[in-house]
Amino acid sequence: MKRRDFLRRLGLGLAGAWALGRVSWPVGAQASDPQGTELRLAFLGDAHLPDGDGRRPEAQALARAVAELRRLEPGPRLVLFAGDLAHNGDPRALALGQEILSDLPAPLLMVMGEGDGLPDGAAAWRRLFGEPWFTHLLRKTENRKQKTVCQIVGLHTAWCPGPGGPAFRVGDAGRRWLARELARLDPEAPLIILSHAPLDPVFRPWQQWTVDGPEVLARLSRFRRVFCLHGHTHHAVVSGQWPVVSKGQDFSEIFLTENRKQKTENCLSISLPATAWPGPQALQGTPARLAPGLGPSGCGWLLLSAGSTSLQFQPQIWQA
Image 1 (cartoon, rainbow, N blue to C red):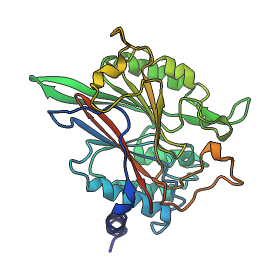
Image 2 (cartoon, rainbow, N blue to C red; image 1 turned 180 degrees about the horizontal axis):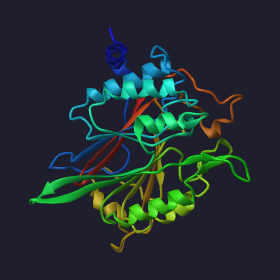
Image 3 (cartoon, rainbow, N blue to C red; image 1 turned 120 degrees about the horizontal axis):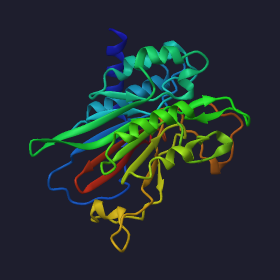
Image 4 (spheres, rainbow, N blue to C red; image 1 turned 90 degrees about the vertical axis):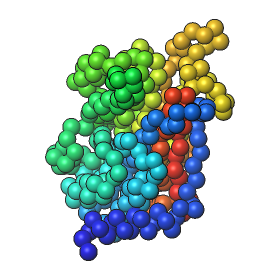
């Protein structure tokens, strides 16, 4: 049996055996959508494969996530990976990750994490997956015309040295590239920003922030609806400055103030779960050693389902 076939069967077996251990919950706005779901996007991240051994728990967990995505009905239109496919830049780990992800039921877009490039994996990552930044438009035909349903920008948050020590940065070149890309996009269409490190300062002692994140976020102010999804923190958390939305409320209303004017706070930040290493939260205290765990409890992936008047973020969190 070829290794790819073995991983596929292993993932399907794990997905079936652990199906009762997965829970999900909707976060955000929900309303009846008579036209059905228009868009489903799946998000993965932080597999932290240590090497090319497909028998390791990290590889089995990633294969499990892929198997669960293959069983979705309807399936996702696109899968996005938020970095740290590898843990320490081992080219064998990156090759194994590509092999596992090749069984996904939809096209894959990826950004790079610091674990993918350290110490010498950046060249291997680019050889396998291309550049760690991208712009992708999802369109549909409406009245014989093409309409943009969603705009997706992959942003590279590089791990760089600095005067205060190493930290994540988009950098001057990255911000210039972003400015050019944003200028081409429609401010009325939903915009997804995918990065490995959070653009907001989540917890600086653990490098859960991007030094020039505020400059990046300032460039997003002209867009009506922005979703910043990131990996690195290994926890499924939705946060932002939007008002609390009750079930049944029209999706379009959550961006309006009481006088029906456009809100200026337009950005929702979503932290993705990891497929490996359910690390502790910052409020629980710094552990003696930050290192991958074996999971799978607390790990998983996230599904975004959006319709004309509905929006759901559904983290699929494994319990066993």
